[in-house]
Length: 107
Image (cartoon, rainbow, N blue to C red):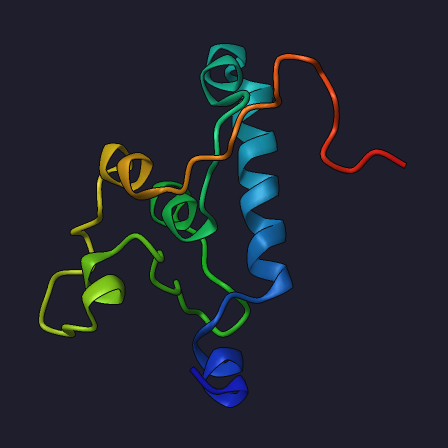
C-alpha cells in the first residue's frame, strides 16, 4: 500500500476521536456496557458500523478483519469478518518470563 492510497483509504484522527466519543457516550448511558467493553480491543471501523458514524469525508473505512481486506477479493461482502477466535489462533505467542524472574534486558 502506498502512502497516497493509505491517506485516501485509511482512517483519519477525527474518525478515531468519534469512536472514543461514541464509546464514552455509551458508557455514560449504560454502565453495564462499559463493564462489558472494559479491557477489550475495539476496532474503529467496527465501532463505526455499530454507532453509525463516519469520518470527515463521509466514509467508513473497512475493518482490517474483513475477509475482503484479508484476501483482497473485492466481491466479498464487507460484513464478512475473520472471527476473533481465528485471530487468536494465528497470533504470535509471546514467551512467558522465565521462572527466576530475570529480565532479558538486565541493565
